[in-house]
Amino acid sequence: MIVLVAGAVAAYVLGSVFPHVVAGWAGRRHGIESVPRSAWAVAARVDTVVLDRWGTVTTGRLVVATVDPLDPDHLRNLRWFAGALEHEAEGPLARAVARLSPRGKVTDFAVVPGSGVRGSVDRHPVRVGRPPWVGMADRTDRGTVLGVELDGRPLGYLVVRDEPRADAGASVSRLLAAGVTPVLVSDDTDRETEHLAEACGIERWHPQIAPEKRERLVTELQEQGRVVAFVSARPEDAEAQARADLAVGGSSGVRLADLDVRRVAELVSLARRAVVGSRWAGPVAVVPAVAGAVPTLLDAGSTVLASGLALLCLVTAAVAGAIPVARPGNLSRT
Figure (cartoon, helix red, strand yellow):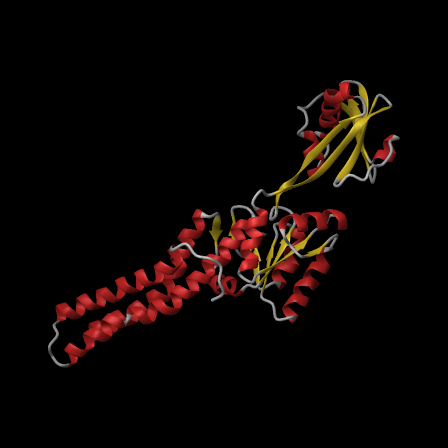
């Protein structure tokens, strides 16, 4: 009898813990690198996910969407001189333009705050920045419009935009179908943030929102009874993440291979399935022990039978806990 009781207790504990272990194994296949044990239960209850624009519904980088020379014959020059100059600058905007060309010989490089950058590329004076600064008419293209000047003459326009993830819309739909509300926060303009949100199917968005306002946003959501996850890798969001119920990305909390919203959806799904497994694996696992208790009490059992049933309890706990996690599933509420 002692063997059965010990097996039942061990099985109950195993049934509560093993689903989270399986969830960790499954998560690593989906780029979920590390989840603190206590975070699984919180992730299962999350009903609002605040997504920083960088790296969640976008790839985390900007791309040049339009290269528009004033003279079609100068397309190559526009790419070469603008790209070579921006290799000397820093930031996502500069990196996007720099991908237009390899490095060149740049001298006298300087950043003009609020306007752009200037310098000489192969001894040709070049300026890249706000169109009025380089003597060009402004444009209303969606994105950041840059004018390029070569040898004191306007050369053409570049338009730089976010690079949305190809499957961002499908991942957001997966969250919405589960009753999880995505909220997009961005340091970009109203127009650009709205366009990105609409492209991904996100109805609630906040443009040009400072770090302190992001923390306030989390507090407001929690006061509405929401369980909030904050997804960001930006150091400026550390306080907002500390305030949130679940921090994803950054220096603490859940760590992902990247902040792709698809991984966030998978995290919530795995967490909910792990909680389901924990809830019923323990009770189911003790069934063999209960069944074996009757012949044992009637002195009809044996030590071998009791040991076998105790082992069966452990096996049942492992299988019962793993099935809900391992099977493909949706994000239905638990």
